[in-house]
Image (tube, rainbow, N blue to C red; front, top):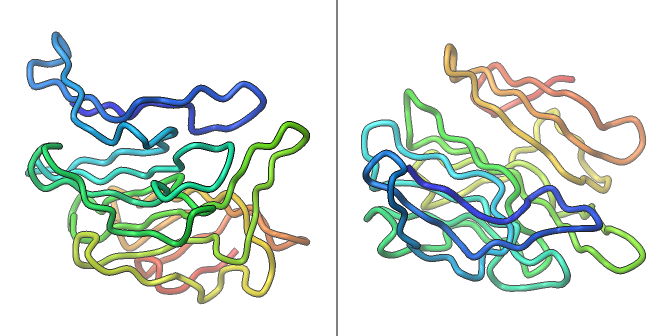
Length: 192
């Protein structure tokens, strides 16, 4: 069992975490396995047949830019972590999903969010969905049918376990472009 810490649903009373914990005895005992500076962890999927392989969506510390923001991967059960998707110090990962039938396919939601004393800045032109088909080594921004040329905010994503070609996303976007989107081709194209 892996657990990521921190409240990745920022509001006025955000609680930072201290990384990732792991239990190998069904939750009786826990060991801290790294990512101490992750701050806020939004999602942590584990490979369905290899428990040593996991990916983590790291929003990091919400009160300012920091280099920890992005998607991380471990191949050795948390002994080491590699930052495999990074946009910039203001854009972190809020969600990442793994295709349970083809775990090399990952879809991550990147989100620029910064909590200030008077507001929460929550959108940029960099935000959106990114897909990897090689287990997180390389990533491509998904765009066909999704909001383009406008500010995009928080996006959540879900890959259907019954039919992994079907992917759902809730997209916060400027104007009337926000809302629910669905892909029937594993994220290649989308429709509202």
